[in-house]
Structure formats: C-alpha cells, structure tokens
Image (cartoon, rainbow, N blue to C red; front, side):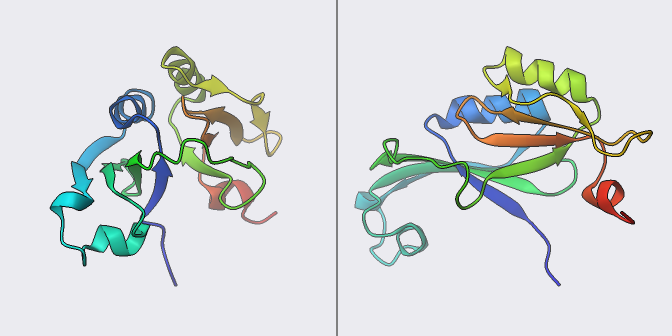
Length: 156
C-alpha cells in the first residue's frame, strides 16, 4: 500500500507561486524556501544526484495542505528549463484538490492570475459531486473537487 505525500511542480517564479498557492488554495509553508547553488555545495550533494549534474542553481519550498498532502515548488534558475515544451497529454497531467467552496476558489484563482479552464460539472446527478479544471498562473492544471475521489467514484 502507498500514499501520496506531495507533488512536485516546476515554476518560473517561486515567490509568486508561493503567494498564489497560499492565497487561492490555503496552503502554508512547511519548509523553506531553500536555495541550492552547485558552486557552494558538495559534488556528492543529494540535489545534484536527484536533479542531475547540469543543474547549477535552484530554489524550492515545501507547501502543505490541510489534508497533510503537500506541493513542492521548484524554481530552476540555472538552467531555467523555461523553453522546454509542455504537453498536457503526456506524463503527469494535473493535480486534484478538494475545496470547501468551489465558486470562491475559482474566483480567487482568476483574481490572482490563474484561470478557469472548464465549466463546472456535476459528476453524479442529484449529489453534491462537482468538479472544474482551473490553472495556476504558470499553466499547471488544477482540478477542483467538492468531495473525495472515493466518495465521488465509489460504488459506481
């Protein structure tokens, strides 16, 4: 058996991302931000082993949700990796979060530079099981649910 502890997201501006995830989704800083500079670190450093020898400089932070599942944000500074092509249909596609107030969260997302990607869908007619696709300001897809996945899809 396994459990999700956190999801890692690369962002071009760590401070902007921290503020967005705090203001819009209620995450809080658990640890960091941390700075990594290969010039100052041991060549056997864990960061180089995990991210590869080409990495020269980065920052990261661990944010935590009220459910205990976190998001680790990475700002790759050297190299930046900004020019890499993102494909929404390959690899990890989105993260899904449960929110207390779907409309309020969508409004906050838009007010703070994100967007609503889809209409709000009622997954199970007659039940309060709603979802919507949104995006953070960096293009990451964030699906919002009103209930847990097990409640929405269990016994279908």
